[in-house]
Length: 183
Ligand SMILES: [Zn+2]
Ligand SMILES: [Zn+2]
Image (cartoon, rainbow, N blue to C red; front, side):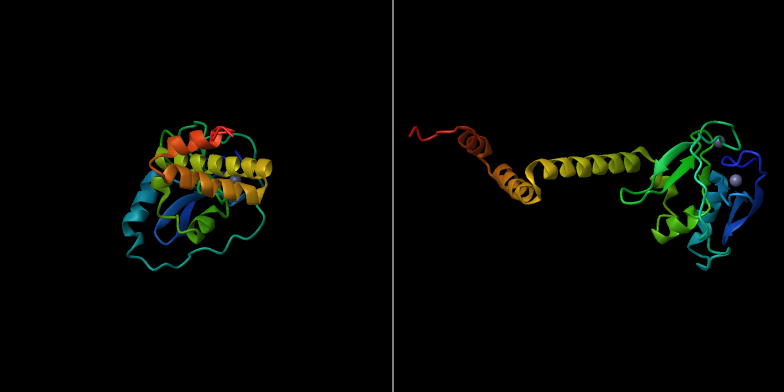
């Protein structure tokens, strides 16, 4: 199997964590984790000592912009975000469900305590909730710019209060009418 990032380097099989075998690229230090070896590791992960097998990957990683191809089935890998606040993205094959981790990704997943959650990260539910949260943050930023941060907070609180009231439609009509008391 060839490295999906460097394309010409042969992957070498070795453990990247206790009980987790992967195809490792000697050039970019990225790793290919098959679904089978990940699940085998998951089953035993809880029973094994949490010691890091390999050296810490702190060297800068070359970023590859072109689409990566699954080393096993030659399909284009899909990028998955891990969390809203993290720039980390993991490539995954939709056919064989193997994952490509760049050199520092496994350590980053472990530091976020998501290393045992890859199955959940790759679900629509997880990905959709990230998209929704990103949209929410983008819209919040837009309204904060439009109204100013203080006014935005005031109007947001007030709006929440209005919609918490049973007669919120009446309250809204009252607000909407410039001269509700006919003065
Ligand atoms: Zn490589
Ligand atoms: Zn594949």
